[in-house]
Image (cartoon, rainbow, N blue to C red; front, side):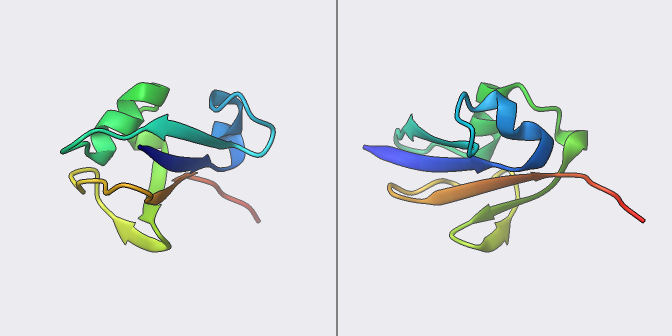
Length: 77
């Protein structure tokens, strides 16, 4: 069983894919914090995490076939 993770912007290089998309093995009771640990992303650099286009927190329990997106803090002007 797999889940898809899309890393955005400066996180893309952590995925090993030019598009920032990677499939990870899913396991029972997997939460977002485990995915963040997998990529070694510091939580203070994360602006938002979405599951199937809905914002969630790091305690969200992932379900099989979820599409997870991790977005960094960014600025502009």
